[in-house]
Length: 233
Image (cartoon, rainbow, N blue to C red; front, side, top):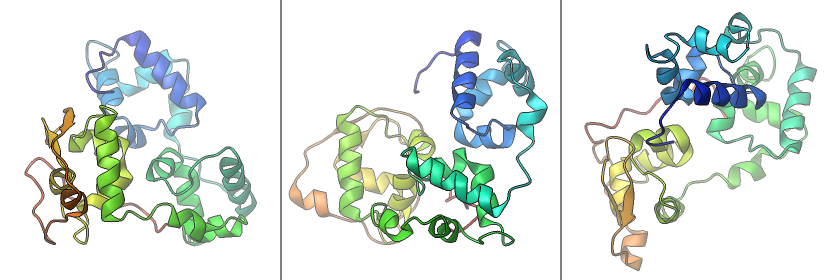
C-alpha cells in the first residue's frame, strides 16, 4: 500500500499472510511481486536480510528458496482445477506470478508447453476466460477512470505492481503506447507519473473517452520498458 509504514510486526504478519495464501516467497519472486515488503524487511532498521525476516515469521527459508522442481501432469491438472474451483482468475498476470512454480511447470515442454494447453487439458475453457481479458482502448479508459474514482494511486510503479494487466495493455502501440498517454486520454491528472502518486479526474467528454494517441508514443523517462514473461499464456 502506498505510504505504508512497515514495522517488524507488520512485516511478519504480511509474510505469514502471503505464505498462507500460497505465495512464492523466494527472494527472486518476492522482489517482483512485493518490492516494498522485500526492501523494508532487508533494511537495517528491521531484519537486515530476507532470510532473517522469513525465519522471524517462523518459516524455513531454505524450503521457501527452493521452487518445487518435480511436478507430474496429474498434479498440474489437479492444482489448476482446484484453483479454478476456488475462484482464482487463471489468466491474471498476478496469479501467474504468485503461482510461479505451477505456471512454469505447466509451460515446460515435457508437460504441456503452454499455460493455454494446460488449462484446456484440465477441462476448462481457455477461450472464454481469454475473452474476459481482452483490453480494448475503451475498457482501458473506463478502468483507469474507475480506479481514479476509487482514489487508487495511478503512478506507473504502483500500477505495474498491482494492476499489471492494464499497465501492459495501455502501453501497447495499438492502444496508447505509454501509461502516461493512457492517463491523459482518460482525462486523469496524475500527481506523480514516476511513482505511486494519487490522481484526480479532470473534465471528461465522450470524445476524450474514445480518444487514442498515435502509435509509437514515447514512454516517459521514469517508466520502464516492457518486461518479458517466461512462457506463453
